[in-house]
Length: 103
Image (cartoon, rainbow, N blue to C red):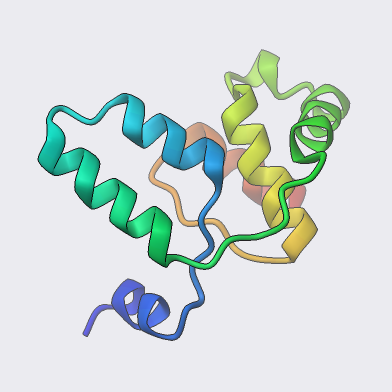
C-alpha cells in the first residue's frame, strides 16, 4: 500500500477549503466534481479562521510573491505552520520555499 493511502486511512491528511476550491474550479465534468466533493466531505479539516491573513503575512515577510508563490500556496504554507504538518508537493518553487522556511 502506498504511503498516501496509509495516511488517508489513518486520517492524517487535512483538507483545506482553498485547495478544494481550486480543484473544483478545474473539474472537467460532473464525475470529477463528485470525486473532489466526496474527498472534501470525508477528509478531516482544520480550523481555517484568519488563515488567509496569516498567509498574506507569511508571503509579505518572506517576499514569496516575488519568488512566484501565490496566495493559495502561501495559504498552504500558513496551514502547515499552524498545524505543524508536512506538505507534499511536486511544485518545485513551493518545495524550495518549504525547504528554506524549514517546514
